[in-house]
Image (cartoon, rainbow, N blue to C red):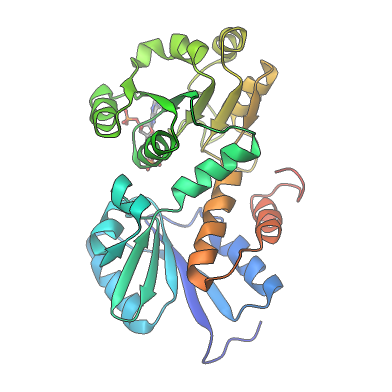
Length: 284
Ligand code: ATR
């Protein structure tokens, strides 16, 4: 690709950000679509975040994806926000417009579209969200807004209580995860357990008991080079299961639409993300 004076700047900002798949798959998709833009990773410490957004805005960057730990700071840095961002209190996409920094939350569409791929329409379903960190917040809000009956469990109970109270959902005891999974239609893991390819919030026997109850779908927001232990154990128990790569691509596709005001090349992005994750292009 030729970089010239008209090349647009996009990126992802996090701390750390070196593990991010986004630059690899975004740049491949941009190249394939013939867009004159580059997508870079910016490792920015929390105390420099405000200076970063100001600098990017002045430099005329088109927009950035925002990841851990900056989603709340990105909310504060936004001069205008989408309804989803406002409701969740977190921003994962910033679009730089003349004199404005517009904050969006495409994690909502990312999760709902990834669940839709699994034929999960949340309205009226009982959905157990495990984790109450940044990803847990987005999931609980997204599912509550979509009309699900949301249960939330977190190792540190106080965080689950705070989130459940704000979002009108129900807290489940961490020790009661096993029972709650049996009574839920869908389980969404948003904790970092399994990120390193080890550990699972529910073990195989617990998933087998849940499968004998109501549980039909497990969605793990975590993704890695291979399927997570939770996804593998759920499938073994006969539960339909998918990891977070699909959500990553859906949220990126929503960001593409915000950056370019044009339909996103979803299939191109999905294939590029699969390759960037070190998987076969058709494994997602
Ligand atoms: P993110 O923005 O990716 O959600 P985070 O805000 O740091 O990251 O949240 C991490 C989540 O994973 C939290 O729900 C955390 O539980 P605590 O609130 O109790 O810390 C959860 N988590 C991390 N390691 C865990 C573990 N070993 N067992 C259970 N939960 C864990």
